[in-house]
Length: 142
Image 1 (cartoon, rainbow, N blue to C red):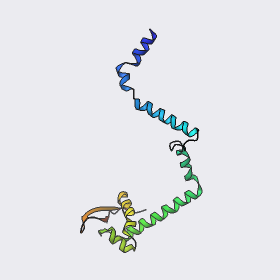
Image 2: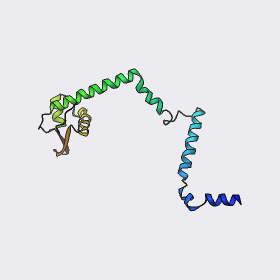
Image 3: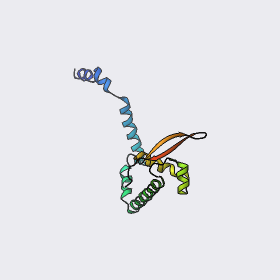
Image 4: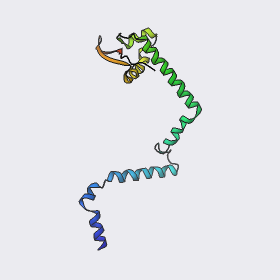
């Protein structure tokens, strides 16, 4: 009788609909992979070493390297904004000519300035392809 009552409760339509075999499979696979790590048959799972990766930022050399990279990036962004006059529209090639560097090197910086709202990107047609021109938005770089 108890068995019948338990079976009725488990196999009611609402509980069967809520049961997900993918969740069970996920848990069993994760347990298997962690057992493989304990047996030294595989390296640690990325989900298990995430905390150690965060501690890398606490290493003084890494923090210093990050600080220097941010300072260099900020200087490059300031230089790009200084090259473009307030109401001037330039494409990446023209900006690169003024700065004496490669347009491909500037592409990520221009995208970053556009995303942050310092530049507005305008789509124009070139000789054979679409060329993006940039104009200052008026936002002041800090």
